[in-house]
Amino acid sequence: MSSSASQGSRLHMVTWNVATAEPPEDVISLLQLDVQPPTDLYVIGLQEVNAAPVRFFSDLLVEDSWSHVFMNTLAPRGFVKVTSIRMQGLLLLLFAKQIHLPYIRNIQTTYTRTGIFGYWGNKGGVSVRFSFYGHMVCFLNCHLAAHMNYALQRVDEFEYILETQDFDISDTPHVLDHKVVFCFGDLNFRIADHGLHFLRSSINSGRLNLLWNKDQLIMMKKNEPFLQEFEEGSLNFKPTYKFDRNSDTYDTSGKKRKPAWTDRILWRIKPKYPLLVTQDKYTSDMSYGVSDHKPVIATFSLELRKFFDTALVHISPEGVWSADQNALLNYTIQEDFMSSTWDWIGLYKVGFKSASDYETFVWVREAELPEINEVIQISMDKDEIPLLGGQYLLGYYSTNMQSIVGLSADFQVSVPLKHQLLYFILSVPF
Image (spheres, rainbow, N blue to C red):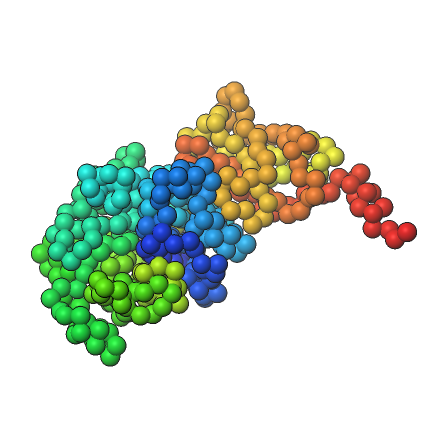
């Protein structure tokens, strides 16, 4: 089903080189959770997440501490982690408001190693692409070569990542085929020529504009046609590198690194494509001191016409749900898609964190796949139903699309009668 309804969606992006630090306890100001109108998508790109080999392999088995803090902060506010990708110290996280989940489809992630012969992926890029209400979007989190005299190498690495990353999607096989692309991260561009004294006095006096014409990325844009296709907001915030940790003071170590806008957020709209992307904010958050970089935040309004507004699968519970008896649910495939006998339906507690955060699940029909609009009934074993009850919902997960393509309304799972009686006995004073 197509729709001509236009929707304004709000995107909140963060890039932060965390310099192997553990996350702060509170990321609320970083995510600006109380902003109005509310955010629809959060995209968080981190660089230099602690990647010592033992730690890295343990993070493959369990969520890393940074993912945990973002999931624990966003889940109670109705945001679900859609996907993530990690390549050594690079981490990219995508969260969406729960109501958008059935309209985020064809999710794919990939990565490109650069750096010293691509060794351990100490530099490079990780990306996620997906369809959002039918619009193809891509987010690319990069960490490019360091040091003042490697500006040309940074440009070459950036171009190499854009050209070599590919996706198994026929109409968008490459990053730049997407309707809108966001490229961000520790791009490591420095401020050329100016001495340390001039840099610091310009920053301290708020005359940041005196530094823009010597910013390597702005300079490189003049000569590189592919860079000219990318837009960036004005650098009206202090350079975000390099600080003494837990302070707002630029590097006082023996190296005395020059301040620089290493951490950037760029975007590109496919030529001749009528998608309105407006940047509402481009700033840094100076309150965080765990790293020698300050995080950079950008918020955007995306005006896009919904190409569809019907979930691929309609799903609903049947009758009363409790651990007293096997529970029933109905699902109906409403539009043709590449369904699979590996698809499954999960029972989720309201406020769930990701597609894998289910209480229990059942496989869809094992033999032949259903027809369009055919109502299929499935039973869920009573031994799998949560004894304590509470507010839940059902989600249909498509293995081929790597996403939840249908969600039920919230419903109550009741406490079994025998447990209600036990609670009553225990609550009666003797």
